[in-house]
Figure 1 (cartoon, rainbow, N blue to C red):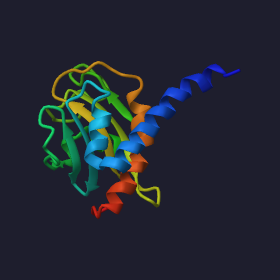
Figure 2: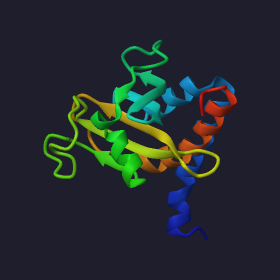
Figure 3: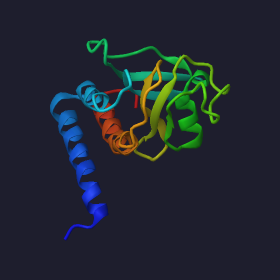
Figure 4: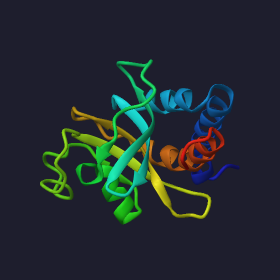
Length: 164
């Protein structure tokens, strides 16, 4: 007999396996596309902490799927900075009304869902996140898959010769 927690873990394990397969078979951008198609957010990206700058390593844009990389941003103008500081996942459905972030970050991003990416030594490298300039509905399955995907993506970035 399967316990209820095992039954709930099976779909996530299938998602992680499908993501891993996409990453290994088709590369980082295709893997971000896979993650993005599970969420209402327009963008899914991997960002690297670099002092006062947040560097975009790879980006998937739902409306411009041929775009491979986005712009860098001042660290202080990003929700990724909060993920780095707190070293905890962060999900924001609507930043204009979320008391945790309202007035703290000056950005056009309204919805955000991000996790910390750690390097091989366990130190903060950057973030893996979904974000949008419009309000997006919360999806409880986004964070666990992002967390599982973060270390796989870091390993792939490192193997691809990123500055990781």
